[in-house]
Length: 245
Image 1: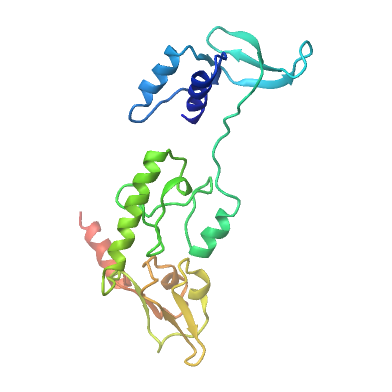
Image 2: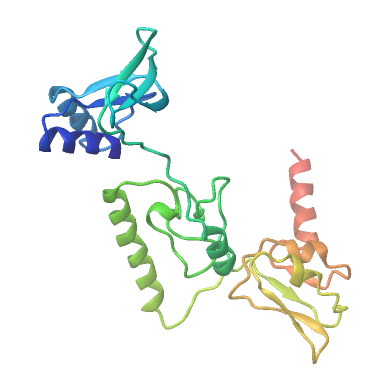
């Protein structure tokens, strides 16, 4: 869409011929298809094909030649141009991994920040009190970014106005009598909830940070950590109930 916007601005400000090379044209959004049709009426020349390379013109100094194949006609094209505007893909910032590590955020395979749930919690993250909005989550246009920013601000206000925070019921707890102080839980927890109390020689869990993932309970060699609502007895009881069917 931003490539189409550039084409429209060129036609609006100049009398130049504008060529738009594309592979797939998907104008998904309110009024976007109408905007595409408007460019067609403005005589923007749409060519379905990927530009192979851009070279300098041998006949005219200062001009460029765009070489591409028109996949609809199957013909190879050499388009002379005074200016070539590239439309590269959007990628995350270079320091996005450092930000994700600092705030304990999850990222997808492209490096964008991930939401807690794409439908039920599209602005929340696995770190309580941290919300995402805009292009840090994925490529977005201005209307979607503004809508997400308003939603993230509203989510933050729901936390600020509360006198007390509601914690998840499915958190882990340490039995200090069984804890051997190995600190395995501290090393594996992705949320930084467990910490080692050097004076007592046992691990302790901050329930405000715990998300109940169960990693700490799985690696505890003495079974000193109990995942509430997911104890061995409860899980075995669920399995026995399933086996009855």
